[in-house]
Image (tube, rainbow, N blue to C red; front, side, top):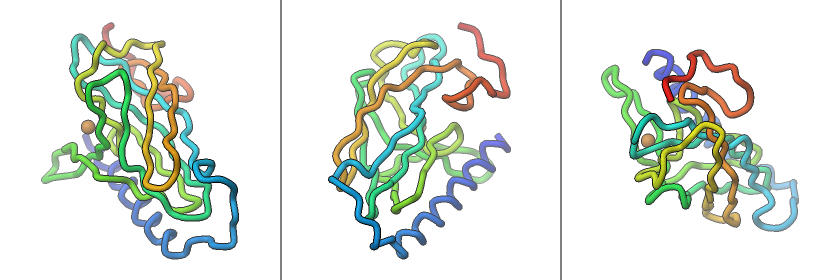
Length: 172
Ligand SMILES: [Cu+2]
């Protein structure tokens, strides 16, 4: 829990910095077409235990375009409803809170990770099994939607890239 608290604070600080960058937008850059400025990298999810109704997906989203944008929603065929969530520190307890959107200042990356921002998959149609994949579509205020293939990692995974998790995976 302490680790999650620290990570949540780090995400908050990164967001505050992002907001400042938005003020000093780099107007000199002139990148191409609408929709090409958003990159979504290493999308991953944790396998869900048993018959868990909900899951979470994570990724790093980078705004490579010349102007600010916002991530405003997501959808997936894997779940009945998909919401943007973050964790907040409330009197020593981590709670999830729904987000209306996430600011993406130009040149800034925002990483969704356990204990911080996440995409909540509400009402999974099937459990997420390690090794599986599912599609996730992210919607933005200005840029075109981006659909990525989310890779399902182990239950205790801390990232989608390597296998540097701090906990072994739980029972299948
Ligand atoms: Cu959540």
